[in-house]
Image (cartoon, rainbow, N blue to C red):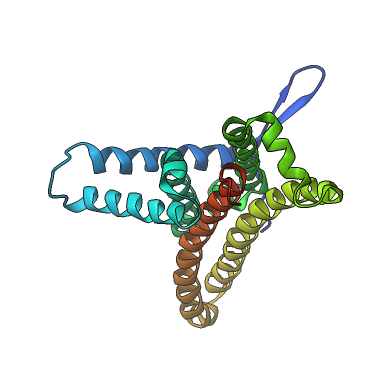
Length: 241
């Protein structure tokens, strides 16, 4: 059975806004999970970290190393919280649709990874585009930042502009494509497993293997998104880029 996304249409008179309720639901759940992880990890801080505090400090160090591999810490330290938020949010969002993927009510598909929706991933990528432009102007000045579009040669200006939008497009679509493709294949294997007993026997091993691979891809894509974010940011705020 083919499922469609549950939608809410809001008529404003001059335009109609359409909300994918499945995406809204899973985004709220993702935000709640990230908040709970952060809250539980930091509610009882100790000099000798254990348990969830140890996990959170590992994430902080991991993101710090990503930033330091792209720019000096004096410049990049201000992006530490951004990196931590992005990597946690995207990792949880990527994995959210795996354990209960394909939950539907009638013909409406209510549960999937929010990053399997191109609107979400392109919104995240657009946010990075805006932030890189903002910090580029803030840290180099309007004139200094504008000059970077004409360096090393002025005739490259059109290509520099195209590059900004190409980076945004690839950043968002890379994340979407990997998560969406993974969930589609899991859904197909799930249908095969639920069709007949023979189908179940034939699909269970590939399904478990692909589930494990999808978990790996979910974490890797979160890492790649944050890494590229810091690469793009370094090109805007660092004088040596």
